[in-house]
Length: 368
Image 1 (cartoon, rainbow, N blue to C red):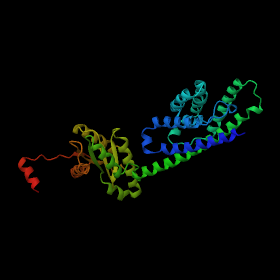
Image 2: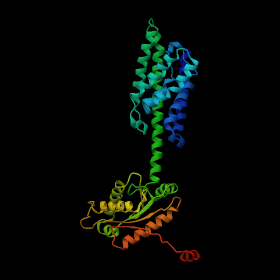
Image 3: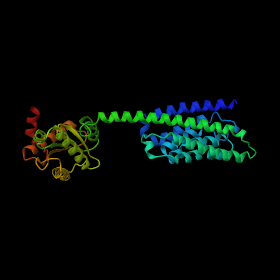
Image 4: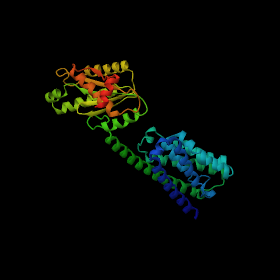
């Protein structure tokens, strides 16, 4: 009976290791190298559990397979099989019959657990506890068959250790699934709060703070263009149809613009009825055609009350001539071009034109 507490100690060690791994997995650094780090952490946990092997009457398998099961359940077959590489290599170095043990202790659990994997688990969905029970039962059946083949004269009483290990396995998996679900909920809540901090609550678009961060980092490494976009006659629309309809117009116009962008472009709400757009296109003719397409898309959209109060947009654009320029200056130039569009008929796009000075004019400008 002294072997039973050993199994419980191993189970406690497993839970502790898994808790540490969950904390590490949600670190920013880990998220960038998740496909590499997950198999390494899982394999290392298996090796640590292998340092305290169970007696033969408990079956050839011990709890070293549970980290592999969690990897297969959460990430799928590929990650689970990659997670077996380190412990398989360690078995080949330290154990006899290592191939048989690796197949039974690691590869089979990896395959069985991956049968219950769903892609939504990796994105934070709750893993059902029933999956852990089913996997534990399948592993019990597998181990019972193997144990019976190795010990043909085994009686029912001597199979008690296998039943005990099934119970320990089921409890451990339930605890690990509960820990994983709880950590995922915390992680998703944190991401939700981070998203809200960078999102305009009315339109659902990124806010100006988010835009300045993304566009600033982009401008540091490549040329780009900035558009300022304004909904024409918004005050008139708002006054006539009410603030609720005005808010709905902002939401609908923002969604329409976002759905019409090039894949690599980025739009945010600037404030009021204004939006700001970053485009990685820098050819003036293509940018003008791009703007005209957005303008036509808005003017032809069936907004509420558009038949009585037409909805159009005006745009101003500025193109960065080189990388590393001041983003705020680029936005100010696009804003100046926007005012030109507003003052020359609206429902159009104007490009900002930088003045070229002669040497005398430049010296005069510098003097000021």
